[in-house]
Image (cartoon, rainbow, N blue to C red; front, top):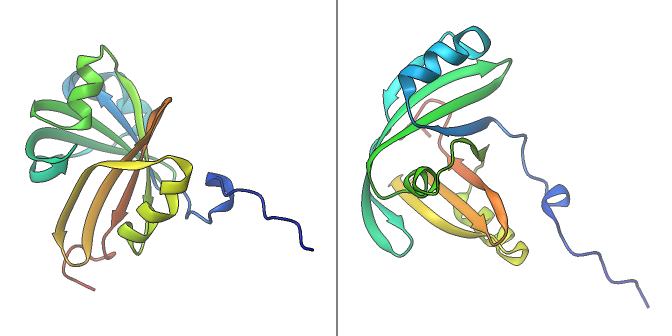
Amino acid sequence: MSAASPPADLETLGLPPIDQVGFVVRSIEETKARYGAIFGPWSEMDGSVQEADYRGRKEDASLALLFGHSGELEIEFIEWRGGHSPHREFIEAGREGMHHLRYRVDDTDAWIEKLAPLGYAPIWYKRFTEDTIFAYLERDGDPLLIEFLQMPEGGPGTS
């Protein structure tokens, strides 16, 4: 009789390396001044998302994004400006700081299924094109979200 295999956990699932740490902040401008020497030089973009699946509804969100780096690791700062998203929940709960870890994956939907037995469920999901999808997942009792990003290296539609 063979021994039962231990239950899967995040460590044994074979996730790729974390490629981004996301922070939610109240002000992109204050963040630039506070952390420029550590994570700059910066790049900025409008990170607004239209009609994402958010907790069972189609919702828009207005977001400002600021990107820096620590070696190869991307550091993302997100300022929520309007609409409905996990970032709004975070700010409205009185929080600011580390919000999520991002993994670049080849198949977002397959990874969502792999993490379901560990209690993770998607709360924010958007399919931009056939090859470009993101999802934020949460689990009860864990304040840190996981983001999966499926996107070709050259950007959407380049696979």
